[in-house]
Structures are given as structure tokens and as C-alpha cells.
Image (cartoon, rainbow, N blue to C red; front, side, top):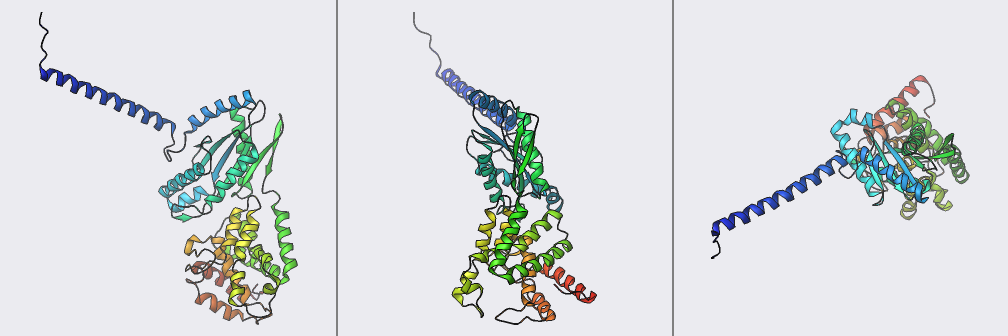
Length: 404
């Protein structure tokens, strides 16, 4: 019996059909993968998990940590003043900030750490096999990276964060609640830093805010500066009062005013690293000496940044000699890229320096100092800050009060 002959066109059609079926199968698999990814990833940033997926994984990791006696910590981060940012800049700019913060979190964590957006402007991070100190260090690095983050048309953002470590018998919900409680403490103290939840027993806990000792530390730094140079610390205190008035007139909120006052008090702390023969020289400095003196904002930043939770203040101190036109130091920032606290301190610092006697020159008059400020508005100084500062000084003059 002869074999049945299959037409060539039929075999070609079967091969084509098989290719189409395989292509359809591959496409279905791709769509299933994309669907699974879409339902497990945050819509603002695909690099973050959804809260539901995060909680599921957290539950598994809590069980695993309890079974094998491993450490586990979580952190909750909240962007400072985000609602106000949305109102001023629009929700589109807000979304850009959320995505940029998400990228900063991913960049600042390990591949086995997991992160999600747990609320509108709130993020949660899980740190497997990590104690509270290790998690706080990691979160601190993330917060420092936000200080130079450029997103939504603004350079420099900040966030508050709370960290909690898993304790025996604790549930995933309780662990997140502990981190959230620590976050509330960080928020209440002005944001911009990390607070750690320290459990005291099964019945309750207490919050240990890393910034809780700032008052004593700030006083100690100011005292150390006064020991080096009495004029500098007296000058700084005068700048504090003047800067706070300008900040209030510019409608800065209470937390910003607090940071402004601290930065103004410590804006010259870097001078503790300047040699006495330069700091106390009775005449003008030469170029080499000026180069050393110009380094003091960087020294000041380094000193302040060593204190947990004072990153935003350290940033203001670093940039308090930046000019509006970008010709200042140490980084040549310009315009609104300079922190508002630094812009205010720069103008108030300049005014008080001009109307104060120094060993190498006599003070100039209030009128002449006002003229210098006005002439340099828009080049050396923020013009809005100068407008407010001059208005305040003029008002004090008219009322018969001392200018500073």
C-alpha cells in the first residue's frame, strides 16, 4: 500500500499555524507576567511593591525570623511638608517627588530589603537580618541623600522616619505600629531625622528620638565656639534673632523657624577649625588665608552632620555663603537651589557684620549697610529676603528700637 501523499501547501499551513500558536502562547505568558507585576508594584514607581504585597512578604519574614531566631527591622518614612508642596507646586510635581524618593530608597537599600509606598507620601521598608541600629543607619543615609535630591522643580527634600526592630512574639501589624509611633516622634520634633522605637516590655514601649539630645549638644557647640572667639558667638546670637524675624515675615512654618534659629546660631561653628593666627588676625586676610577661611562652612557641616537628625541644619550651614547669582562658595549654588535658611542667614549675617566694629575696620552706618544690601539684591542676596529684611530694619528704626 502506497503512503498517502500530503500536499506541500497543507504542511506549510500547519507549520504556520504552529508558529502562530507558539507566538500566542508566548504573548499570553508575557501578559500574565506583566499583570502579575502590575498588581504587585506601586503605580507611582514600579520599583516599589504595593502595600498588600509588602504586608504578605513581611508576614512571611516575621515567621521566618521567629522560627530561626533572626533579626528583622522595619522603617516608615514620611516626606516633610508634602501636602503643602502639592498645594504650591501641583500634584504632577508631587508625583515626581514621590518617584524620586522611591528611587532614593531603592538606591539606599540592599537587594534583599523590600520597600513599598504605604500611604500618599509615606513609605515602608523591611530590613531582614538587621537590628534597629543597622536599619537606622541605612535610613539616615537615605535621608541625607534627599537633602541634595532635585525633583518637582525643587532641590533638597527631607523626610521624617521611624524604625522598629522585631521583638519576640510580635506580629507584623504590631511591628509596623511601633515604627509608625517612632515616626510620629520624628515628625513632632520637626522632621528631617530618624527616631527609633525602643521596647521596654510586653505591655508597652517608649520612643527614643535620636534628636532628643539636640538642645544640650547645640549649647555645647555654641559654648565651644565662644571659647575660641567671643565676637563670633555674640554675632551669631544677634543673627539668630534677626533671621527668625525675617523667617516669620516670609511665613516659614514653626519647624522651619526652629531649624533657621539653630542654623543661625551655629553658622560659624566651622571656625573652630580655623587657625588662631587667621581667626584673630588684626588686619585684612591675604588670599591664602581667605582660602582657609572659606573652608569653614564645610567644616561646620561636617561637625553638625555628625549629630543624628541635624542633616537639614548641616546643609543650611554649608550653604550660608552661597550667592544668589551662583558666585558664592563652597558649591556655587544659585537662586532657589540654595536652602531658604541659608539665604536668610547670609543676608542677616552680612548686615550685622557691616554694622559691627572689628579689629581691622570700623563699623559702617545703618544707612550705609542698608544701601549695600539693596545694591546687591539679586546678585549677592535673595531679593525677596532683602526686601523683607530691609523692611523689618526700617520698621525698627522708625519705632526707635535698636537695629540689632
